[in-house]
Image 1 (cartoon, rainbow over the protein chains, first blue to last red):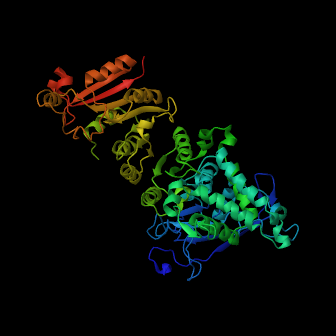
Image 2: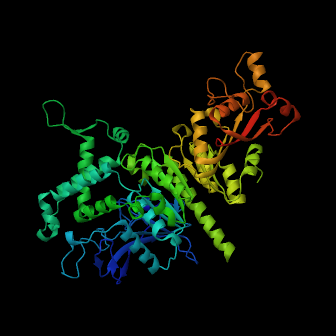
Image 3: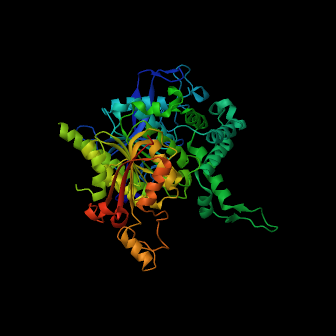
Length: 387
Length: 200
């Protein structure tokens, strides 16, 4: 039983932060209030200096580690890296993980009731961007009495939030870790997101985003969007070694049509995704990905965008990741060096593509853990020296 | 912390709060020392995962990058000093790299094993085989050192490129100077250490 594993955070219970203050979004919309669902692992120390924020990616949520029920089949999505003695060591850090605004796992989002109409927002939920998420995460930190984070950590879209934290709240971040991320999406990357969005919106059951009103769900479209995403999160070599040309059923003769293992796997992934993810949230999250570009505020100059940052950075990428390639991470690192920020980087050898950031790859885990522990050591010794 | 002899020589040249780029920084010994003692804003490039892990453990700004991929990603005039210890002979394009080092940095320091040392000459000239020594421990078939040179060769390149030689130290295997080396550096020096500036 995995729950009894010594390096698990064990059973966790999600909590809820209710914010009644109006939230002014980047696009001008105002939300009268919002709720964020979150989990914490580990213990906050007396001077609240060991808090670490996890920012989730496109399809992530607050449940990053441990189990909700004893018989859960799987732990949280980043259990490989969060737990006692793991890279994000809950013996040392107080880890905070939330479901972002606009999500579909309990935080205010398209499935929530619009107080103005009394019906779910659906497609009327305002567009949110990375900067909005970071602002709400800061409000959650205020609520928990956390002045500054020992580290803000995220992979992919999560890494974008970590960078935005360093830019927007320089005095509230001690270390920033951006894993398999980018300072902005490439045209190719936006293109994949648009294909995924088209798959969803062209599903007849999408009903202009009001599928819930007619008791429908654009399962075909959302599943297809997930399949497209999934292929881009893996590498050719990785898929080759996982599936090869193995056949699930049928044969090449006169029998039933051949179904390759990879087809069966993708179809399963697509179907499973539609059970727990909301199509409007998918559209919203991919838009946030596409829009992210902190340099837009500084005339396209990423070096200037990072000028306000004060924390140390770790930029990690994976050799076979082509959706968020090592070159994109190099752009982040180069800008940070030019901006005279403390930064370390590593390109982890892995055949698992973009999904590598979720896996317990030894070198990756070692690099992440070492950087975080060193950063915390430094912070605690500085705090000790000043007091 | 006592620095390795060659690194101590380099450390002496670097001002407090300088911006330093260390090419092939290894386990980050020089940078960790400079960060602790001179508040230097330093970065190291290395491609070896084990070295990078050691650097992370020391809190050194280590960046995973292969020197053979060039330094085009670094801005002109971005550093006060660019350092490269004992890597010149192992890179694919030493001249291009030296040009880039002096584009990125105001000055650079380069160290390399001197292939003109008498032991090398003896092993090749009399022994008839490729030299193997403390600083050149590999056999011909597995050596990473593909661009070995003598101090005479190096200074010829500096002259061709108009690199200004600000300082030169040629030392023995213990990184110490000796009267014999002053007499005939290319014969008695096993290690060379150059501080270069841009063409004046």
